[in-house]
Image 1 (cartoon, helix red, strand yellow):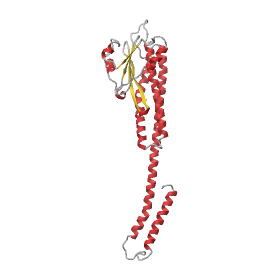
Image 2 (cartoon, helix red, strand yellow):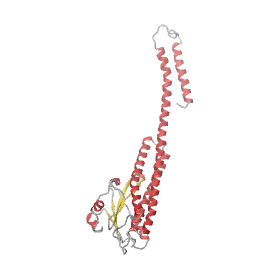
Image 3 (spheres, rainbow, N blue to C red):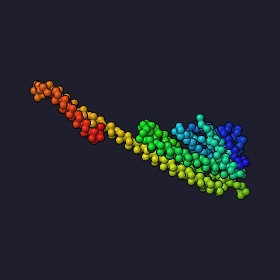
Length: 311
């Protein structure tokens, strides 16, 4: 069985943890392992650090739910020693915890007992793959938004843009420290301490080279975030320009209507003056003449504004 060096715990209590983690586990590390999953991964900064005889890691797995237009986070913590890796999966409120079966299948394919550092590589690589998959899905959502920006109501578009922008910012906040943590492994700055010539490393050179491929994936994910933000900014700018154009069209119509109403209002006000010596006051056709002028001015203005495209 390829996973004898891997102990996976789901929402363990303190007794279960102490039965499998190193005896010299620091109090702050134990507190982190026992802390319940935070909503949206708040307060959790991904990291992988050396703690003397073991390596302690905090990871966040980003999961997209396209049907509900939302993203949530699954926390996975690692304790890696020379001969064992302990993973602690935490169940998010109302969600499913991280499923390590895919990682387990990859490990089992090796048909041999894998070193703890190699198992840790497969776990971190799965996290990197999830980032890439998530960003592909967000790109699809941005493409869908771009296709319907001329059809959907402005309020719906505004909500979608705001939601996607919030997701991208949150992903960026978790992706950057994950990338930096992997870089420290690649550079050889993270490993168990107190090594002797006869003891092995948790992350030997061949494993560090594998982590370099994961680091490249995280770099691609970082570039994908910037590309997605540029796309979203373009959609937002287009939507704002569209709103401005719509407002301009409304202003044109209001201007045309005000102008059409202005001339009849002027004529009515003119003939509404009470003077004895008005030319049309005692004219039999004066009333019809005033109506003719009003109708003629209204029709001529309507034709003029329609030709200009304001009506």
